[in-house]
Image (tube, rainbow, N blue to C red):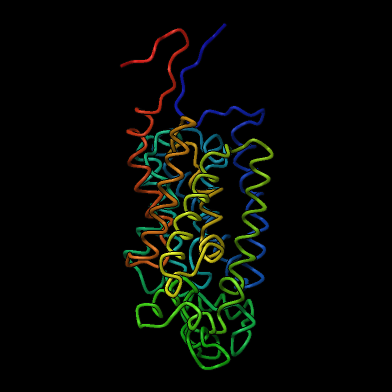
Length: 352
């Protein structure tokens, strides 16, 4: 019998690596559709740009490394990185944002470390943090849901904004973000964080039209879409339950404690679970088999600390959503977590 040594990710299902990656991409479809419905066709444009960019950069690096371009692209890992990055940035971000993000994710984070299985950090989240820190204005310019816009945006208008910063009729992105009441709105997480800092209660803040009964308009459905995709991944045994469940339970417990301690300034469990990138992060990003913990006990710790950090940064930090920062911080801690959570070898006693 021939034994082969290989780095992670190790596939314990019956699917090949390429089929697993494509299955994860397919599981993103419900959340992707929800984003298109509530935030416009700019999501599609960003996705197409991302897929083109990651394919080109992956191919160039393979040529430089004298490796097979087909083998590198056919495993689907670069495409999955492009999909996750496209779903994370604002739909009407300038075209060069996704180009820079794709370059950093593929070339700097993935390939310079040796390619798939050797990267220390999640490529999509590392690129997202780079973009957020470098271009905060472009990376926080999310559109309100389409029903709140003062004027509907067509595909042609969104293409013009992404590639030329203005529509054919001369409207800028800030003007397109204006709602029917004449205000330019931020995301629900940013809005409620700012309002609380200005002395408003959660109840007062959530009277704004950008909010629904429990969380931001549209964002609940986006998170439900990714939750549906996550259930498919769990049922197909493509991912383990430990990370997403521990992350969501940790976030829910923290938000419940915060709400009990100070209900006036804490939005509660449902808001935290169905706002921002919570479900996308729990099922599609934190579960990255390369950069996440590899032991069952380690996965529980890994996911729980990510949930804790998301709550702490959302509540006390300077950024409204904290998924990318939390995941990258725990990526750095994975070697330590795995070291102390390795299961005892069969036949060996417990080390005192």
